[in-house]
Length: 261
Ligand SMILES: Cc1cc2nc3c(=O)[nH]c(=O)nc-3n(C[C@H](O)[C@H](O)[C@H](O)COP(=O)(O)O)c2cc1C
Image (cartoon, rainbow, N blue to C red; front, side):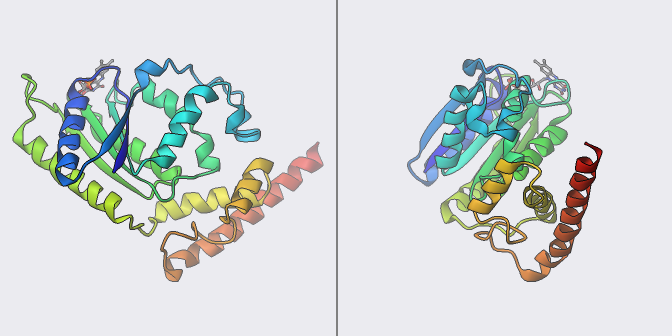
């Protein structure tokens, strides 16, 4: 298997200890390759809010030379491992800046057949909130399944992982591995269906031309969720109605905008 590791910590310390344990566990299952990106080495500038990615395409981002190769790796890898320590009750600036550059993936989600393992460590608090934020973000980009490891004090102060931390890491890593290995795609959650149909309606409402083209060309516009992901008809039914309401709302508002111009 080929894993991509995106390290959102500026160093390889507490959070990285968990990553090392994950790699050990994965390597016990089979031979793997790891592509490791320390975001600190990327010198990624802040998003400048030029809106090029939203309006004209991600290839028009002024920082595309740094971002596009990572997105390509995210698409190619079998599994993503992404980390952040808690900084002032939030993700690190490195992770936030990285996610800002991927905001266009909310408009044009593309990771529907991908799985991710999120790793968060903290000295005392904020880990659940940060893990939940990262999970939500990846879900909105399309990630089919996200697994979470979040720990207070990942190690015992001497660099050793406590037994409980090891056990939880191994258990979640195995679940992640089994999911990646099987290639099975999970039925979307209600939240995933909700977000999908908001963006679908926006694309169909033609608010942004490039989004409409993307949703049409990738065959996403005609169903309540990505056609390759299993989802039963009953679960989809409320979103058929929700989509229609959203589309009406968006169309109505864009007509009003024209009238006011
Ligand atoms: C700038 C900064 C802000 C931090 N903010 C918090 C915080 O709000 N809550 C907390 O419990 N720990 C906080 N910490 C501690 C780290 O989350 C914790 O030590 C983490 O395990 C560090 O991971 P790392 O060794 O991979 O960088 C902060 C650390 C730094 C450097």
